[in-house]
Image 1 (cartoon, rainbow, N blue to C red):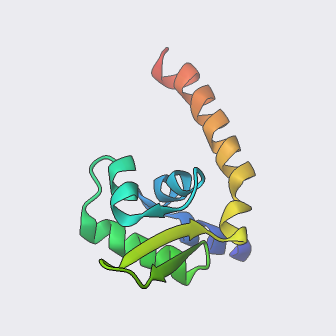
Image 2 (cartoon, rainbow, N blue to C red):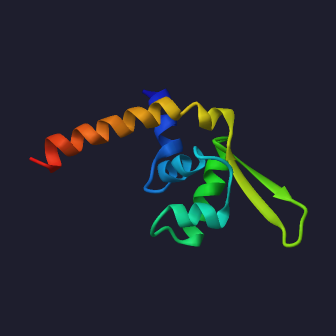
Length: 102
């Protein structure tokens, strides 16, 4: 149970899975992630990105340019969640058919 709890703590909340999904399509800057996720505030996005970085799900790369550019990407650990995300999508489709549409 402890291992399951550890995993859930990393992905819990309303925004972390959508952020991870947004990054499965490639590296993105802050504004690009915010455009991909409807209704997330800049403050919340910043907090969630920091938490995902602390848990080694994403990396934050700072480019020395004018203006300074920051890019986020999935780590190999973050990419390893793809099968889990696919299964969640499949279950969501099943749930919608069974519960929501009936």
